[in-house]
Image (cartoon, rainbow, N blue to C red; front, side):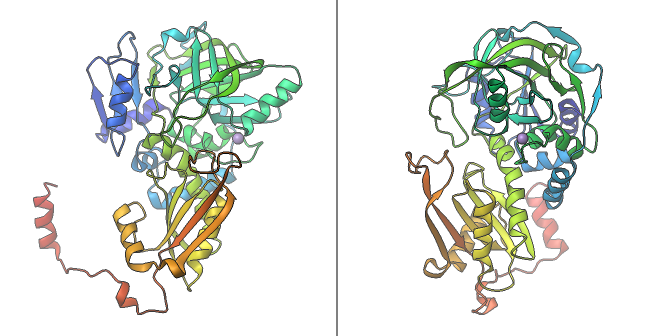
Length: 447
Ligand code: MN
């Protein structure tokens, strides 16, 4: 399965908006992406100024599309993830395929990389999954990293001190550069696997392959010691330098504010593999898609952890307003008073970046902010139901955290109905309606 297969499916479901006006990669395309950010369609930019390539964006911009990509509904979503995380399966390596239609020297000026925000330092590649293996070949890793375009064959890569950072350090200690493939335009399952919080040593391509029901194929690169999905649109082959560094940024991170500038390693791009008619995939930093891809796999962690303290966790939402990272709403079926607070503690433990969390009963829709606010308004008493934890480690993305120590204050809101008071006081009043009146409403809504 490929990004193309998914786009064909979305085309059938009328989820693709074709943009036929000629637009520039510098701000114009990102401007349109931003306008369609909330629950918007997939955007296919058919005319890109100065390029004969199409740009696709907002591919994983809604929960519905992510579920469609994995062939599950919202209820089955977390189960699919835990199964795939628990049973990674090596994808088949093939000798040739679509991504090798064109093999060429690196010239980054030829690609429609996007410049997103006003003060961004340069065009950035934001949808690439980066594959690397350890010098001894024992550990493989795939993760998503922003890449700043420096010139025709150099990128700067932001390495958060996680798995790829570790592999790069190991190579550096052995006096070597680290070979990487940077794959752009892959199936949503590959992006989701690459964003999953898996232990060091698990190859995210293997998890993607299980998520895709054994349908991922990889191919060895032409210029570096790495592999890449054979159905990717475009693969940049490079080496993360052991010695060269530059100041990276400014660049906008997930919260929609500019990240601080840091010295980061340079990637020497040594070759390119691509489809002849490749489509370039854009991904708007801090857009709903960015927040969903980062947040959704972490909802699974919260769901698993909360499931250990209450028998049923109905839904988890790392909300878009909380940048898909800092705020969670969790709906549960509690058994006794106090369960709500245990769910909050479990959520904070499962996702250390989480800052504010709300737990609600199963009749509240976690994806509807009005519904959640109603639960807080009618079921929550700050004197009884509030949990505050001071001076605790949180996310570096939180602008309000202590910038020196990184410490923050966490707040949990238990907005579940108290069992000590009569149930009727908390139930939403209903208006009886039969099929006939429902049909009238549907007609009035034009459905
Ligand atoms: Mn990893």
